[in-house]
Image 1 (cartoon, rainbow, N blue to C red):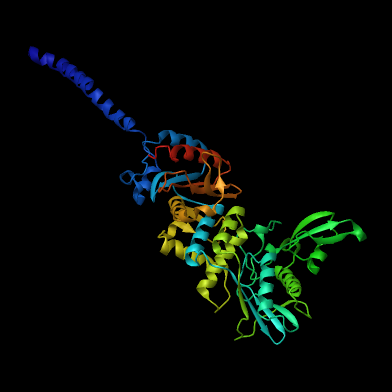
Image 2: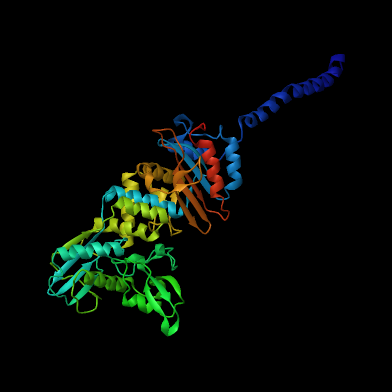
Length: 454
């Protein structure tokens, strides 16, 4: 064996060790390169795929790392989105959620566009052979003040010039026993059952003075007469003022509407012999009066938003259904929901998988909406933002709509923005922790006017 052959294994081992030492830094640099670029986030992709990526001004996660980290501590199962003039600039945890009452924005938007801002709910009145017929169309604001106006209009139209045998109430515009998924049976007016003819949100407000045989019952509202039904329901109540929910007492609202109508008609000089009852308007009979509620749709929507009134919301849904169906058949809640969905999909351009509604108030947990789809709805509602209540405190007091169910906390509205600019936002939490206010605070401080919208 030559001297060179004896050295070869040693030289090979040295060269091998030297190669490892030279390659090791290169491998280490390659391993560290992704970490320098920042961790990948699962929620960055959908925003970019939806046309709201970095090229269109949306946040890709790079400039809001601290905000995302703070939000991640609050969002157990929820998402947020912020827009600017029709573009998504930030979102975290996109997906479909149960929206609760912020879905009223979609219902209102469909009604304002399909029915018109000056739309008025109508109630038809017919007179034939001594009978006065009232056909209702689900006016949610047939309150005492409206009955006074309706009675006065009938007196001027000559409806009370002759004695009337009876007043007949026609509920045939709607299907019987309308039910809303998720509706409760509380004493609150916003939980009033839907109906073609509903007076004073299906509630009777009475004042009881004294006890037992010496008890005296009177109406707790100067504009509302005490009817026989109200007197009967007040029996046995303790002294004080009581708002009685008719549905909770097992009484159909149509009975109260009939009694109230008779009282107001008599106050305008009508002579009515019999008690009010339900029935149908004879075919072909023309209305003597089509009464249009004094409140335009904008004011109805304002009241709905202020009190988050579920009864009003689904009455709007029924109005949309009646507009589409006409007088050919009874209208169901599903007819109206179909019209809201038609507006969202065909007029607003949302995709079928982004929104699913079973009713229009937000009561149902079967309602679902995607985060970006809800942001689109909020952005479209911008011209009507003055109909919303203020939320928060200065300098971050904003027009917004809240939504609350057990385990659902949502908020949608408009962050402070320079003139001519829209900054809609959406917060939907489907979780036990109620941290809606904290999440809003983070978004407001990050994206309001004066903050850099990244």
